Image 1 (cartoon, helix red, strand yellow):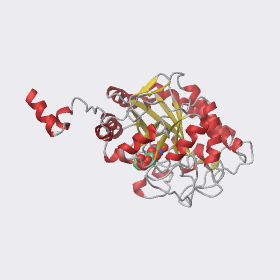
Image 2 (cartoon, rainbow, N blue to C red):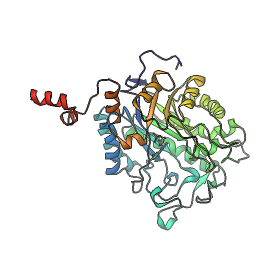
Image 3 (cartoon, rainbow, N blue to C red):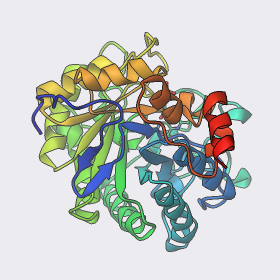
Image 4 (cartoon, protein in one colour):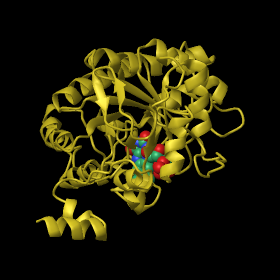
Length: 374
Ligand SMILES: Cc1cc2nc3c(=O)[nH]c(=O)nc-3n(C[C@H](O)[C@H](O)[C@H](O)COP(=O)(O)O)c2cc1C
């Protein structure tokens, strides 16, 4: 795509991605809910994701869905490693589509950060007797921190399995009705672990130079792209810096993004961090937006901005000034699932509540008028 900004681009302008039209630029960012048993989507997922669609997000992306049982962060993660997972996911995608949202899925392998307790139980590994597993894998036998397992270094057979798992998961995602897939290559999970020199200490063709470290993440990305229909978009979420001296830098990420673009990926979702506990992140409003802007302009690929985007004017400005093509919101959509409708109102864009809510949601004046009309 060209990095020239069409004059009409704003938060409520539709965005075309292959055959899909996102109705606006607001995306519900992936958020682990740790509410599954054996990887199955639950009623919690139906309500959690459904609420964000009712609230007007143009695209709702599931949390990290594990492509294999050993690729889960915790035993309670969502999964898409067997055909039985399809049906409850299909129920969710049908509902999201009914609300006018595009359903997306994040495909993930947790790598060395697997077999952990859910966050509200504290940071510790889970033993096989408590539902955890021993085959935690990574690029090298280097653990994330003393609270995590020491991973087994993946050999070629193990890598082939991971690639095949991503491909099979992408095919199941299509059957479940997802119209967009995002490869999780951020936050210190498997693909990011290969990309970062802090976690990848390999001496074979998958370690050392950036080109070598990029090789396996690109195999995963290629497998997902070729397993997903031509007319549907595939995105990649990247951590573009490790925020640690000697770690992955934004310059590296720009080079990697060029390789990702060459694989036919439609958008890079620009995040950061998560691969080293020494990270020092200068968290503040829109703290990752400049990275999305740099990749958009230097690589010439669509980008999504994420991270402390909370204000309607802030979000609108990111799109209007061409810093990114869309915004992803996580915590703000937990605080206010109706944020997109409220944002439309604040930006004087016609806000549309679902018909079921119209009367109750109208302001006092319009409500009196509506009641008078009825
Ligand atoms: C509860 C929770 C769960 C999350 N789970 C995921 C996840 O599954 N995959 C992912 O890429 N990011 C995950 N994130 C990160 C968010 O998608 C987002 O990038 C981050 O929270 C910054 O955006 P925010 O400031 O709008 O919250 C999670 C964040 C939260 C708060």
